[in-house]
Length: 137
Image 1 (cartoon, one colour):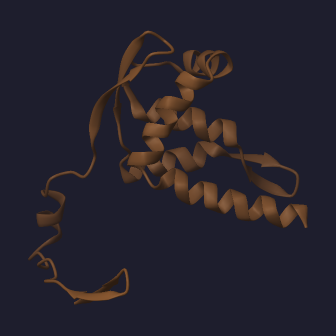
Image 2 (spheres, rainbow, N blue to C red; image 1 turned 180 degrees about the vertical axis):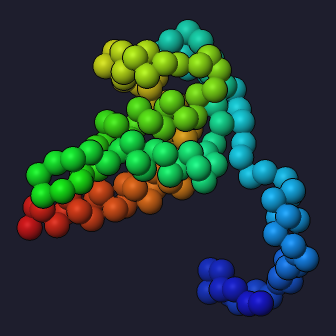
């Protein structure tokens, strides 16, 4: 297979096709875990990137009824991402809601890690931007 990178065409070997789907399921996971410091809170939290199932749950929680049908709720998306990503300590929905209303930079620090490790947010943000820009015209 060939691929163009910075104007150069590079050839590389394709990865093998497995004999069965079970081989893919048994392969190492692409989910990553890290402990990140949140100095604004004086604590660290353990976070994990999303699986496909978690990404779907986040999308579902982010969609709320609104004028003209179902709309993306930015705040619901961010809270759902936080709940799915932070694995230690475990936060309740009520605690995340309170933290969301109280914390700016610390909450954003966790969301930034999520954005770096997961392309879910990038996809949703691009979609929301295009919808928003369409409304301004």
